[in-house]
Image (cartoon, rainbow, N blue to C red; front, side, top):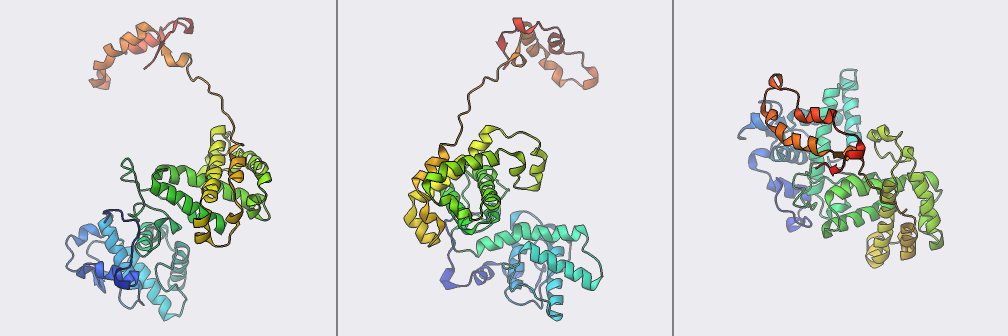
Length: 389
Protein backbone atom coordinates (compact mmCIF):
# COMPACT_ATOMS: atom_id res chain seq x y z
CA UNK A 1 0.00 0.00 0.00
CA UNK A 2 3.00 2.31 -0.24
CA UNK A 3 2.61 4.51 -3.27
CA UNK A 4 3.83 8.00 -4.04
CA UNK A 5 4.62 10.23 -1.11
CA UNK A 6 2.27 13.24 -0.96
CA UNK A 7 3.20 16.10 1.32
CA UNK A 8 -0.07 16.17 3.28
CA UNK A 9 -3.30 14.17 3.15
CA UNK A 10 -6.51 16.18 2.67
CA UNK A 11 -10.07 15.12 3.38
CA UNK A 12 -11.97 14.54 0.14
CA UNK A 13 -15.17 16.59 -0.11
CA UNK A 14 -15.03 17.45 3.58
CA UNK A 15 -15.54 13.84 4.66
CA UNK A 16 -14.50 12.60 8.07
CA UNK A 17 -11.17 10.77 7.63
CA UNK A 18 -12.71 7.45 8.71
CA UNK A 19 -15.48 7.78 6.12
CA UNK A 20 -12.85 8.47 3.50
CA UNK A 21 -11.10 5.24 4.46
CA UNK A 22 -14.42 3.40 4.33
CA UNK A 23 -15.01 4.54 0.75
CA UNK A 24 -11.51 3.44 -0.24
CA UNK A 25 -12.00 -0.10 1.07
CA UNK A 26 -12.92 -2.80 -1.46
CA UNK A 27 -16.52 -3.97 -1.03
CA UNK A 28 -15.53 -7.40 0.28
CA UNK A 29 -13.47 -5.75 3.07
CA UNK A 30 -16.37 -3.68 4.46
CA UNK A 31 -17.80 -6.40 6.68
CA UNK A 32 -19.46 -6.84 9.05
CA UNK A 33 -17.99 -10.32 8.43
CA UNK A 34 -14.80 -10.22 6.39
CA UNK A 35 -13.19 -13.10 4.53
CA UNK A 36 -15.83 -14.41 2.17
CA UNK A 37 -15.02 -13.58 -1.47
CA UNK A 38 -11.50 -12.32 -0.77
CA UNK A 39 -8.91 -13.96 -3.02
CA UNK A 40 -6.27 -15.95 -1.14
CA UNK A 41 -7.88 -15.19 2.21
CA UNK A 42 -6.15 -18.16 3.85
CA UNK A 43 -2.80 -16.88 2.59
CA UNK A 44 -3.22 -13.27 3.72
CA UNK A 45 -4.80 -13.99 7.13
CA UNK A 46 -3.04 -15.52 10.11
CA UNK A 47 -5.93 -17.75 11.13
CA UNK A 48 -6.71 -19.96 8.15
CA UNK A 49 -10.38 -19.93 7.13
CA UNK A 50 -11.51 -18.03 10.24
CA UNK A 51 -13.49 -14.90 9.35
CA UNK A 52 -13.14 -11.46 10.92
CA UNK A 53 -16.37 -10.63 12.80
CA UNK A 54 -17.06 -6.96 13.49
CA UNK A 55 -20.75 -7.10 14.30
CA UNK A 56 -22.22 -5.29 17.30
CA UNK A 57 -19.46 -2.69 17.62
CA UNK A 58 -20.10 1.07 17.84
CA UNK A 59 -19.02 3.32 14.99
CA UNK A 60 -16.36 4.08 13.89
CA UNK A 61 -14.61 1.02 15.37
CA UNK A 62 -15.76 -1.54 12.72
CA UNK A 63 -14.44 0.71 9.93
CA UNK A 64 -11.13 1.20 11.74
CA UNK A 65 -10.61 -2.52 12.37
CA UNK A 66 -11.58 -3.45 8.81
CA UNK A 67 -9.17 -0.88 7.40
CA UNK A 68 -6.36 -2.06 9.64
CA UNK A 69 -6.86 -5.68 8.53
CA UNK A 70 -6.84 -4.56 4.89
CA UNK A 71 -3.71 -2.46 5.43
CA UNK A 72 -1.90 -5.45 6.94
CA UNK A 73 -2.70 -7.54 3.85
CA UNK A 74 -1.37 -4.79 1.57
CA UNK A 75 1.68 -4.27 3.78
CA UNK A 76 2.79 -7.80 3.03
CA UNK A 77 2.11 -9.20 6.49
CA UNK A 78 -0.82 -11.42 7.44
CA UNK A 79 -4.02 -9.79 8.64
CA UNK A 80 -4.24 -10.26 12.41
CA UNK A 81 -7.62 -12.00 12.37
CA UNK A 82 -7.14 -13.73 15.72
CA UNK A 83 -6.03 -10.54 17.53
CA UNK A 84 -8.66 -8.33 15.88
CA UNK A 85 -11.44 -10.83 16.65
CA UNK A 86 -10.32 -10.92 20.26
CA UNK A 87 -10.26 -7.13 20.44
CA UNK A 88 -13.80 -7.05 19.01
CA UNK A 89 -14.90 -9.61 21.64
CA UNK A 90 -13.32 -7.53 24.40
CA UNK A 91 -15.19 -4.41 23.28
CA UNK A 92 -18.50 -6.24 22.93
CA UNK A 93 -18.15 -7.61 26.47
CA UNK A 94 -17.21 -4.15 27.75
CA UNK A 95 -20.41 -2.78 26.19
CA UNK A 96 -22.54 -5.44 27.89
CA UNK A 97 -20.98 -4.79 31.29
CA UNK A 98 -20.78 -0.99 30.93
CA UNK A 99 -17.00 -1.11 31.24
CA UNK A 100 -15.53 2.12 29.82
CA UNK A 101 -13.40 2.09 26.69
CA UNK A 102 -12.33 4.75 24.14
CA UNK A 103 -14.74 5.79 21.41
CA UNK A 104 -12.35 4.80 18.61
CA UNK A 105 -9.23 2.78 17.93
CA UNK A 106 -7.42 6.03 17.18
CA UNK A 107 -8.07 7.12 20.76
CA UNK A 108 -7.00 3.73 22.16
CA UNK A 109 -3.26 3.49 22.71
CA UNK A 110 -1.45 0.25 23.55
CA UNK A 111 -1.56 0.82 27.31
CA UNK A 112 -5.36 1.18 27.19
CA UNK A 113 -5.80 -1.86 24.93
CA UNK A 114 -3.52 -3.94 27.17
CA UNK A 115 -5.52 -2.93 30.25
CA UNK A 116 -8.78 -3.88 28.50
CA UNK A 117 -7.32 -7.24 27.54
CA UNK A 118 -6.26 -7.81 31.14
CA UNK A 119 -9.75 -6.93 32.39
CA UNK A 120 -11.31 -9.29 29.82
CA UNK A 121 -9.21 -12.29 30.88
CA UNK A 122 -9.62 -11.55 34.59
CA UNK A 123 -13.41 -11.26 34.47
CA UNK A 124 -14.01 -14.14 32.06
CA UNK A 125 -11.39 -16.71 33.05
CA UNK A 126 -9.89 -15.39 36.27
CA UNK A 127 -6.33 -15.23 34.94
CA UNK A 128 -3.91 -12.96 33.13
CA UNK A 129 -3.59 -12.98 29.33
CA UNK A 130 -0.95 -15.45 28.09
CA UNK A 131 2.18 -13.92 26.52
CA UNK A 132 1.19 -15.06 23.03
CA UNK A 133 -2.13 -13.25 23.24
CA UNK A 134 -0.40 -10.10 24.44
CA UNK A 135 2.12 -10.28 21.61
CA UNK A 136 -0.51 -10.75 18.88
CA UNK A 137 -2.47 -7.71 20.03
CA UNK A 138 0.73 -5.69 20.43
CA UNK A 139 1.53 -6.19 16.75
CA UNK A 140 -1.77 -4.57 15.79
CA UNK A 141 -0.98 -1.46 17.82
CA UNK A 142 2.65 -1.32 16.78
CA UNK A 143 2.02 -1.01 13.05
CA UNK A 144 -1.60 -1.19 11.83
CA UNK A 145 -2.86 1.43 14.29
CA UNK A 146 0.03 3.76 13.41
CA UNK A 147 -0.93 3.41 9.75
CA UNK A 148 -4.54 4.25 10.67
CA UNK A 149 -3.44 7.35 12.59
CA UNK A 150 -1.30 8.50 9.66
CA UNK A 151 -4.09 8.06 7.10
CA UNK A 152 -6.56 9.98 9.26
CA UNK A 153 -4.15 12.84 9.98
CA UNK A 154 -4.52 15.82 7.66
CA UNK A 155 -1.76 17.90 9.23
CA UNK A 156 1.98 17.54 8.58
CA UNK A 157 3.29 14.04 9.21
CA UNK A 158 5.85 15.32 11.72
CA UNK A 159 3.08 16.55 14.06
CA UNK A 160 2.36 12.92 15.02
CA UNK A 161 3.97 11.42 18.13
CA UNK A 162 5.20 8.27 16.35
CA UNK A 163 7.11 8.31 13.06
CA UNK A 164 7.16 5.05 11.11
CA UNK A 165 7.87 5.12 7.32
CA UNK A 166 6.34 1.67 6.97
CA UNK A 167 3.03 3.10 8.21
CA UNK A 168 3.16 6.65 6.85
CA UNK A 169 4.08 7.09 3.17
CA UNK A 170 4.46 10.85 3.66
CA UNK A 171 7.76 10.49 5.53
CA UNK A 172 10.51 11.27 3.00
CA UNK A 173 13.17 8.62 2.50
CA UNK A 174 16.31 8.94 0.42
CA UNK A 175 17.01 6.55 -2.46
CA UNK A 176 19.35 4.65 -0.14
CA UNK A 177 16.60 4.10 2.44
CA UNK A 178 13.68 2.72 0.41
CA UNK A 179 12.88 -0.11 2.84
CA UNK A 180 13.27 1.66 6.19
CA UNK A 181 11.15 -0.44 8.58
CA UNK A 182 12.30 1.20 11.79
CA UNK A 183 10.53 4.09 13.46
CA UNK A 184 11.03 6.54 16.29
CA UNK A 185 8.83 8.36 18.78
CA UNK A 186 9.36 12.09 19.36
CA UNK A 187 6.20 11.92 21.47
CA UNK A 188 8.37 10.43 24.24
CA UNK A 189 9.93 13.85 24.87
CA UNK A 190 8.26 14.93 28.09
CA UNK A 191 8.30 18.75 27.80
CA UNK A 192 5.45 19.86 25.47
CA UNK A 193 7.24 23.01 24.29
CA UNK A 194 10.41 21.05 23.56
CA UNK A 195 8.54 18.15 21.92
CA UNK A 196 6.70 20.49 19.54
CA UNK A 197 9.90 22.26 18.48
CA UNK A 198 11.83 19.00 17.99
CA UNK A 199 9.08 17.63 15.73
CA UNK A 200 9.02 20.80 13.67
CA UNK A 201 12.81 21.12 13.42
CA UNK A 202 13.60 17.51 12.53
CA UNK A 203 10.59 17.16 10.23
CA UNK A 204 11.49 20.31 8.32
CA UNK A 205 15.14 19.30 8.02
CA UNK A 206 14.14 15.88 6.75
CA UNK A 207 11.75 17.28 4.15
CA UNK A 208 14.41 19.74 2.99
CA UNK A 209 16.97 16.96 2.55
CA UNK A 210 19.33 18.51 5.13
CA UNK A 211 19.01 15.31 7.22
CA UNK A 212 18.26 11.71 6.32
CA UNK A 213 15.81 9.41 8.00
CA UNK A 214 18.58 7.23 9.42
CA UNK A 215 20.25 10.26 11.02
CA UNK A 216 16.99 11.59 12.45
CA UNK A 217 15.65 8.31 13.82
CA UNK A 218 18.84 6.61 14.96
CA UNK A 219 20.90 9.57 16.20
CA UNK A 220 19.47 13.09 16.35
CA UNK A 221 16.26 12.28 18.19
CA UNK A 222 18.18 10.32 20.84
CA UNK A 223 20.44 13.34 21.42
CA UNK A 224 17.43 15.57 21.99
CA UNK A 225 15.76 13.03 24.26
CA UNK A 226 18.86 13.11 26.43
CA UNK A 227 18.54 16.91 26.49
CA UNK A 228 14.94 16.46 27.65
CA UNK A 229 16.05 14.03 30.37
CA UNK A 230 18.66 16.52 31.55
CA UNK A 231 16.12 19.34 31.74
CA UNK A 232 13.74 17.16 33.73
CA UNK A 233 16.34 15.93 36.22
CA UNK A 234 18.36 19.13 36.71
CA UNK A 235 15.90 22.05 36.50
CA UNK A 236 12.96 23.13 38.62
CA UNK A 237 11.88 25.22 35.62
CA UNK A 238 13.32 23.65 32.43
CA UNK A 239 12.31 26.66 30.33
CA UNK A 240 15.06 28.56 32.16
CA UNK A 241 17.52 27.08 29.68
CA UNK A 242 16.10 29.61 27.19
CA UNK A 243 16.43 32.54 29.62
CA UNK A 244 19.40 34.87 29.91
CA UNK A 245 21.67 34.35 26.85
CA UNK A 246 24.70 35.07 29.04
CA UNK A 247 24.01 31.82 30.88
CA UNK A 248 23.83 29.67 27.73
CA UNK A 249 27.49 28.63 27.82
CA UNK A 250 27.19 27.62 31.48
CA UNK A 251 24.10 25.54 30.75
CA UNK A 252 25.87 23.87 27.84
CA UNK A 253 28.90 23.07 30.00
CA UNK A 254 26.63 21.52 32.65
CA UNK A 255 24.89 19.43 30.00
CA UNK A 256 28.25 18.35 28.58
CA UNK A 257 29.31 17.02 31.99
CA UNK A 258 25.95 15.32 32.52
CA UNK A 259 25.79 13.59 29.14
CA UNK A 260 29.39 12.38 29.52
CA UNK A 261 28.19 10.09 32.32
CA UNK A 262 27.24 6.69 30.79
CA UNK A 263 24.35 6.19 33.22
CA UNK A 264 22.72 9.42 32.01
CA UNK A 265 22.66 8.44 28.35
CA UNK A 266 20.00 5.74 28.46
CA UNK A 267 16.96 6.42 26.26
CA UNK A 268 15.80 2.77 26.24
CA UNK A 269 16.36 -0.41 28.24
CA UNK A 270 18.81 -1.82 25.68
CA UNK A 271 21.21 1.03 26.50
CA UNK A 272 21.94 -0.54 29.90
CA UNK A 273 24.62 -2.75 28.37
CA UNK A 274 26.66 0.38 27.60
CA UNK A 275 26.51 1.87 31.10
CA UNK A 276 29.96 0.60 32.07
CA UNK A 277 31.61 1.92 28.91
CA UNK A 278 33.24 5.37 28.81
CA UNK A 279 31.50 7.91 26.59
CA UNK A 280 33.52 9.00 23.58
CA UNK A 281 33.90 12.80 23.29
CA UNK A 282 32.38 12.63 19.78
CA UNK A 283 29.11 11.38 21.25
CA UNK A 284 29.07 14.25 23.74
CA UNK A 285 29.74 16.67 20.88
CA UNK A 286 26.82 15.17 18.94
CA UNK A 287 24.48 15.93 21.84
CA UNK A 288 25.72 19.53 22.10
CA UNK A 289 25.41 20.14 18.37
CA UNK A 290 21.87 18.72 18.27
CA UNK A 291 20.74 21.21 20.91
CA UNK A 292 22.64 24.10 19.31
CA UNK A 293 21.09 23.38 15.90
CA UNK A 294 17.61 23.23 17.42
CA UNK A 295 18.14 26.60 19.11
CA UNK A 296 19.54 28.13 15.94
CA UNK A 297 16.65 26.84 13.83
CA UNK A 298 13.96 28.25 16.10
CA UNK A 299 15.81 31.54 16.54
CA UNK A 300 16.06 31.96 12.76
CA UNK A 301 12.36 31.21 12.23
CA UNK A 302 10.64 33.12 15.02
CA UNK A 303 7.66 34.21 12.92
CA UNK A 304 6.81 30.62 11.98
CA UNK A 305 7.51 29.47 15.55
CA UNK A 306 5.03 31.98 16.95
CA UNK A 307 2.40 30.84 14.44
CA UNK A 308 2.95 27.18 15.40
CA UNK A 309 3.47 27.42 19.16
CA UNK A 310 1.80 30.67 20.16
CA UNK A 311 3.17 32.07 23.41
CA UNK A 312 5.93 29.68 24.51
CA UNK A 313 9.43 29.64 26.04
CA UNK A 314 10.82 29.68 22.49
CA UNK A 315 10.12 33.40 22.22
CA UNK A 316 13.24 33.93 24.35
CA UNK A 317 15.69 31.94 22.23
CA UNK A 318 18.33 33.84 20.25
CA UNK A 319 21.35 33.12 18.11
CA UNK A 320 23.42 33.88 21.21
CA UNK A 321 21.95 30.83 22.93
CA UNK A 322 22.94 28.64 19.98
CA UNK A 323 26.45 30.13 19.86
CA UNK A 324 26.94 29.49 23.57
CA UNK A 325 26.16 25.82 23.06
CA UNK A 326 28.36 25.50 19.98
CA UNK A 327 31.34 26.88 21.91
CA UNK A 328 31.13 23.95 24.31
CA UNK A 329 31.81 21.46 21.52
CA UNK A 330 35.29 20.15 22.28
CA UNK A 331 38.08 19.83 19.77
CA UNK A 332 39.13 16.21 19.34
CA UNK A 333 42.73 15.87 18.10
CA UNK A 334 43.22 13.53 15.22
CA UNK A 335 45.10 10.38 16.15
CA UNK A 336 46.40 7.93 13.62
CA UNK A 337 44.91 4.46 13.78
CA UNK A 338 47.88 2.96 11.90
CA UNK A 339 50.06 0.61 13.93
CA UNK A 340 51.81 -2.72 13.65
CA UNK A 341 48.50 -4.58 13.52
CA UNK A 342 47.68 -2.93 10.17
CA UNK A 343 50.83 -4.09 8.33
CA UNK A 344 52.23 -7.34 7.00
CA UNK A 345 55.53 -8.02 5.28
CA UNK A 346 56.08 -8.53 1.52
CA UNK A 347 56.44 -12.31 1.74
CA UNK A 348 53.15 -12.83 3.63
CA UNK A 349 51.34 -10.43 1.29
CA UNK A 350 52.50 -12.43 -1.74
CA UNK A 351 51.19 -15.67 -0.23
CA UNK A 352 47.60 -14.41 0.14
CA UNK A 353 46.66 -14.52 -3.60
CA UNK A 354 48.29 -17.94 -3.88
CA UNK A 355 45.97 -19.28 -1.17
CA UNK A 356 42.73 -17.99 -2.69
CA UNK A 357 41.93 -21.27 -4.59
CA UNK A 358 41.77 -23.04 -1.22
CA UNK A 359 38.58 -21.17 -0.38
CA UNK A 360 36.62 -23.34 -2.81
CA UNK A 361 37.79 -26.65 -1.32
CA UNK A 362 35.85 -28.63 1.32
CA UNK A 363 37.08 -27.96 4.83
CA UNK A 364 38.28 -31.55 5.26
CA UNK A 365 40.50 -31.32 2.18
CA UNK A 366 42.29 -28.11 3.04
CA UNK A 367 45.96 -27.96 3.96
CA UNK A 368 47.35 -25.27 6.22
CA UNK A 369 47.15 -21.97 4.40
CA UNK A 370 50.47 -20.58 3.10
CA UNK A 371 49.27 -17.18 4.26
CA UNK A 372 48.64 -18.55 7.75
CA UNK A 373 52.08 -20.15 7.75
CA UNK A 374 53.57 -16.89 6.58
CA UNK A 375 51.81 -14.96 9.34
CA UNK A 376 53.20 -17.28 11.98
CA UNK A 377 56.72 -16.74 10.65
CA UNK A 378 56.42 -13.06 9.75
CA UNK A 379 59.28 -10.76 10.78
CA UNK A 380 59.12 -8.41 13.72
CA UNK A 381 57.42 -5.03 13.56
CA UNK A 382 60.72 -3.32 12.77
CA UNK A 383 60.75 -4.85 9.27
CA UNK A 384 57.03 -4.45 8.60
CA UNK A 385 56.48 -1.61 6.17
CA UNK A 386 53.61 -2.24 3.77
CA UNK A 387 50.03 -1.35 4.67
CA UNK A 388 47.49 -4.17 4.52
CA UNK A 389 44.70 -3.55 2.03
